[in-house]
Image 1 (cartoon, rainbow, N blue to C red):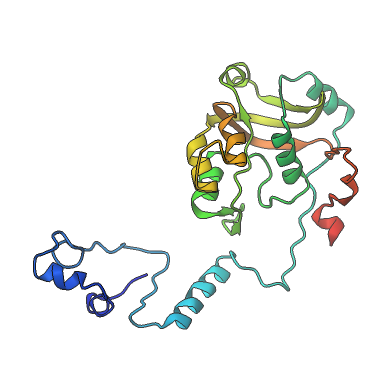
Image 2: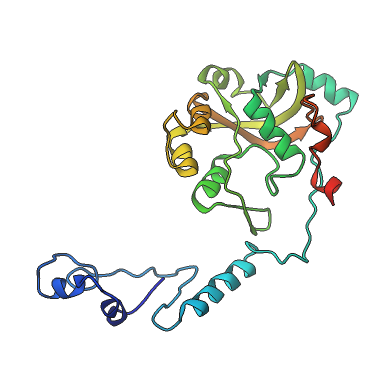
Length: 249
């Protein structure tokens, strides 16, 4: 958002610019302190030249052009990422070192594997996590942004990181069964306070969702690729209602 100094002064109902010109307020941006405009902003809305409706149209057109907003008639149906392993792949997976998923982790695994977290195809790596925390969007493989504001991550302890860091492939188990594998695993710091603060506005454990994250291990895990071996079944009487995007379409 931008406006000329004259426009800013004309909108100043508190008289701050007047006080700055009289020297009452020191180091006031645009008067006694320089304003350093961005050299190459992605978008510049000149509110001195555009009214509210025109400014809104510029923003909406920009979002549509960059794929953040998609017309309803442009229907996208994401396929499930689940692919049953071959006998050899299943045998290999059962012999891998592994992480046992908690309820939080297996719910996220289901979300990714069923296709509901597009364009995400694995637990978030550090760059993907930062995109979601700061921009509430995630870029796909061609650079198009998609709305996503939930950090979908997998945590582990320092002891697990030490045991698994040198492995080329690790398994994810739930209730004793291998449900997925991660190729070339990567570990990075679990910045719990930042994740909670940006997602929930607090990292107090009085917030139930923040409490779950604050109790996690010290590291997060991602990898070059994930293989989803089987569809998650919770056996709680409502599995038949947990449909994939293609099943709904």
